[in-house]
Length: 194
Ligand code: SAM
Image (tube, rainbow, N blue to C red; front, side):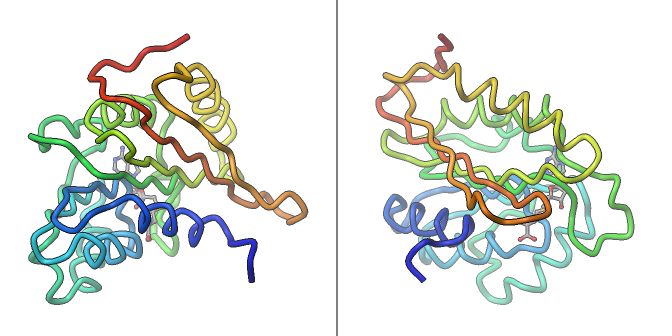
C-alpha cells in the first residue's frame, strides 16, 4: 500500500526526523502504541516523556514497554503542563485525540483548551525541523468542537515559523480520523500567530 493510513504516515515522518539520543513526547499515551514506537526510535540514550491523565493508561503502557521502559518517563499529568517536565529541546511530539479505546470511562477525552496549550508550548520546545503530529478523531461528543478549535489555531500559525499539513483519506465512512502535522521551520521560542 502506497497511500499510508494516518498513523503509519505519522511514524514515517518521525522516523525521518528524530535522531537517536533525542527527547520526544507522547502527549496522549493511552495504551502505549506510540510510546513503544518512540522508545525504539530514540535508542538507548534517548528519552520519551509519556503523558496521560489516567493511571490505567500508564499501567497498560508500562506493561507493553517491557525492558524499553528505562527510556520512558510515564507522567500522570496533563500534556498542558509539559513545560514542568522538559528542560531542553524535543525532537517530536505525537497526539492521538479522543478517548482511550476499551476504557471503562469513555467520557475522559482530550479537550480543545489543554490540547492547544500543549501544542503551543511544544512548538516552542521543538527543534528546528522537528515534527508535531496530531491524529484528530471527531466522532465522539465534544470531538467536533476540539477539531474546529484546533484547526482554527493551526491555520493561524505563521507560515515562516511552522508548516502545517492536513492528511486524510477522503472516501472512508464513519468519521475517519485525519492527521495534522506541523514542521518547525526556524528556531523560535514564542509561537507567532497571524
Ligand atoms: N496513542 C494511544 C494508544 O496508543 O493507545 C491512544 C490515545 S487515546 C486516543 C487518548 C488518551 O489521551 C487517553 O488515554 C486519555 O486519557 C488521554 N488524555 C486525555 N486528556 C489528556 C490530557 N489533558 N493530557 C494527557 N493525556 C490526556
